[in-house]
Image (cartoon, rainbow, N blue to C red; front, side, top):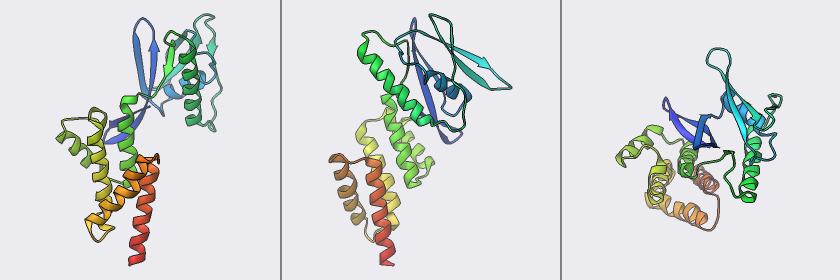
Length: 218
């Protein structure tokens, strides 16, 4: 999964990595009909080491759907659409099967849907920014100052600094002294993450504690 900005908003993208005569990446919005029709069909595949055919079919107006076929039999792979489908689970199950395929076959799978590790920092910043309700424009300004477009273009130490800046900005009116906020952030977030805690959960717990302390002091 990849996060891209569109019209000032973050949009989650699905990267479909295809190994053919070369390596190709089909990028589509995760909420599009193309992505969902692809995921529906891909969820029925048990062996991703076998060749597949991807076909883009135009629908009404600007709608595009995806059809998958078994390359050997030319048989269409079809799963019925339902509003109750859990897309996150479908993506996770497909990625799990792809992991098995790549570990049991020496060659590159013919089709894979993988999260690009280079984009992990982008998602990290987005999730924390959203949790803190930190202005997107300020993040963009910070990136421009760093001569970057996305967080993933920067060293991890700079991203850590950005996360700290966002967190302390949120805490600016929660503590009487800035050093108190920074000290609690160090202990409850940085030290907790270093000990194996989930960063987002640690930040959320830290925010809750500061908010509770502020309410109790009023």
